[in-house]
Image 1 (spheres, rainbow over the protein chains, first blue to last red):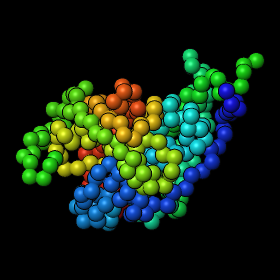
Image 2 (image 1 turned 90 degrees about the vertical axis):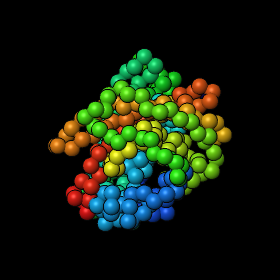
Image 3 (image 1 turned 135 degrees about the horizontal axis):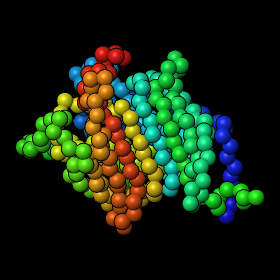
Image 4 (image 1 turned 45 degrees about the horizontal axis):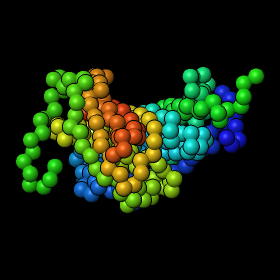
Length: 149
Length: 140
């Protein structure tokens, strides 16, 4: 077993900033074979469907960024096998936006196979507006934690 | 739906939609190109769950229903095991919930992805607002 990991309520996760481009949106959508026009890739479709002035990024891009925020903090070996995020999308994220994801550790709860660490997650654009908010948890196996007294 | 194929999907009737209703299962081959494109799109070379961009729960929903569109209001994602390129992934999805808030209707879909070896990969739960024009009205 490698180095043990310690966690404390109030810990801040390293912020994660993402600059959104139309190309990034197109590649995200295209990665699943979505090549036709959509509210994410085509301005006319976005205007017709959403009534927005242009395209928006899928909420699932923000979801993926929240996953990355958590994975970077807890490590892929742990988070990818016992992590989750739950994000509410509060404002559109558009091409040209830079969004910063932040997290604060809010709780540690014992479970039968480790400790579940809870995190409050928030995403903010450069205007200071909250684009997304929610929470995440990561089940950290006891083997990664310091021995109990 | 394939171009030119008859659309046999049901128009959404929110009142009649049943919580717990199973949506059509489907499968797809996860390729390395899909993983590479996903990682480029999210600007993260270590992104491990390209299943997210497949939007599998609403993909299953749209195999059964047609509607005027929707907006993702909330989404939860549970990681169990990163998918492996070259493996076929099968999706099982269902209607998890529906509710009305401030006069607007929402549908909650849920899905799990399982690979060809039987490994549970992830679970996703999505809350969709079924009045997509509300986005433009509020935010422009």
